[in-house]
Length: 467
Image 1 (cartoon, one colour):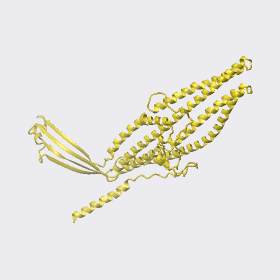
Image 2 (cartoon, rainbow, N blue to C red):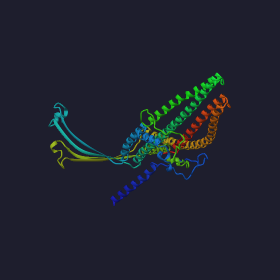
Image 3 (cartoon, rainbow, N blue to C red):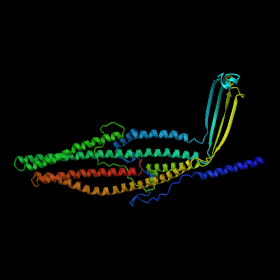
């Protein structure tokens, strides 16, 4: 009866401890975000799911660009550094996942001690040489009543997953940088072609002026003005070539290669993207954007640290044990059962006075968690703002593109007409020079708007957490 009573008391205490342990630490719950229904009232496809964001292989149309992106993903130095950091974190995670298991160590000792005849012990000892041989496995086990080990595993897992999202964010950033550099390069090629074409037209105009001057139909002032305009246009060519080389070198560096020419498409006018991007709803950002997911993992880790700090207020139970073979002679070391020994102990430690270090650590963890909440909300706010800005940017660039196309179409006809009219004496040289300069500006502006539109879609891809 007495034994049954003791068992019931023990079981009741165990249930009480387990019930209390549920209150000591709390599981993570996402804070309220109050997300808007749409991006700044811009039209979006609400049925578009976050997981439908295409990979760069499915998004970009240019096969040469996709080859470059494959090289960047395989050889970029920053990605390789993060990959090694992830392997190191994974190794640590494997250890933390097993922190609920006991520590088991094996101790093997062999020692010989010779006492001095003139020492106090040696003067009384029957012999001066003592031997001891020990073979003893030991066990040490921390019993987790309060959820501390569980929160340690949660903290480690959150850190690892946050690092994985950091790697994915770096991938998306490199995809965006590389794609923008590639299309900037195509834009510079187009600018060079346009400038060289206009330079050729200006040379022809200058040659016509010189011919007319030789027969008294043009003035030296006209020739000087034409030469000045030609020199101004020619000065743009080495500047554009310098930019092309710098862009090629930057793109090769992203791909983990030394400076070299970049194999690329011949025209900027080709369709850049295979699929249309839809923004979906702001909630999709929580599932797609790696920076937001990383901030949430940091918040989860901060919540786990609060639980860990809280468990320090409660007693800890540690069980230790040791057993093995012990002898004073090597010949008897493995004599069983005479050399067998063993001991076991259990200790309960309750903090009483720690100079407020435990409470200070707990309060610090609470404030760090609140800071992580604000940081998470800030990342969501910035994510929504980036997508809204990208959508708005695309809308207004399309409006700008309409007017730039109209201007370019008008200038294409104007420059063709100017050459014919001047040849037949129905337009003066100033009109021709003005038309040539306006055509150059219109053609370059058209190229720059195409580049802006392409970069705007790349920015939207990045802001949606593209893959």
